[in-house]
Length: 221
Ligand code: URA
Ligand code: SF4
Image 1 (cartoon, rainbow, N blue to C red):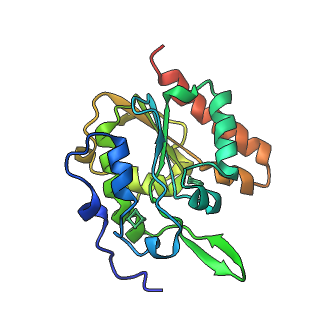
Image 2: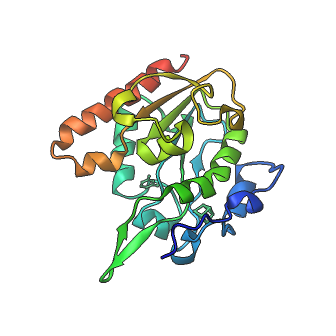
Image 3: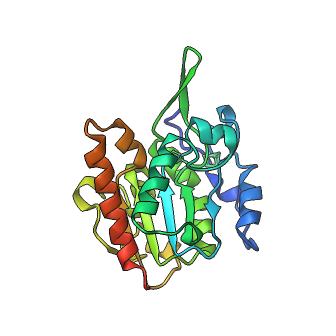
């Protein structure tokens, strides 16, 4: 597969003045900004409250999400939902999306095996994320794992080193001028699928909940 050539990027498909997130989602369904649309079933756009106080950004849809067309509805989504609830973050406050909006996978026999999106996919898809943020006005941005961190916080950010720490948003963003939100904060944590892969799932889950509690405590009221 030709992964070294830079894809054209999503820019051409992003409406310049979308009325709302629904219009963005419709436009994203047509996106051919990188090669991932070829093999994936459909674009999986963000979902949740348009006036969300907390915006979660994950990596890319998984196998189940690819089939259902909604983010975080598979096994990682269950972990995330439990952790969000345990941290005291309420569903009506939440919008959830991914850094890359098509499922990247490799066939092994009849199974589709997740492949981490590369820098070219992250860059190609970033205009959708930027467009979502232009309509959202979160108090807190929760960055889930290394791919979202690359898209939002830049290539040198290390989740393991800086997780669970509040950072000013968008001042701490990679290209803060892309995110015209005043006076918000961001916090990075592990990806919920890392809980499923961990030797000690319980400890990994507790760590995720602790980081989400940092986000919860930063909400006003
Ligand atoms: N993992 C993600 O990062 N996003 C999803 O939507 C599902 C699994
Ligand atoms: Fe477009 Fe992103 Fe899908 Fe690539 S992954 S085709 S940039 S929506």
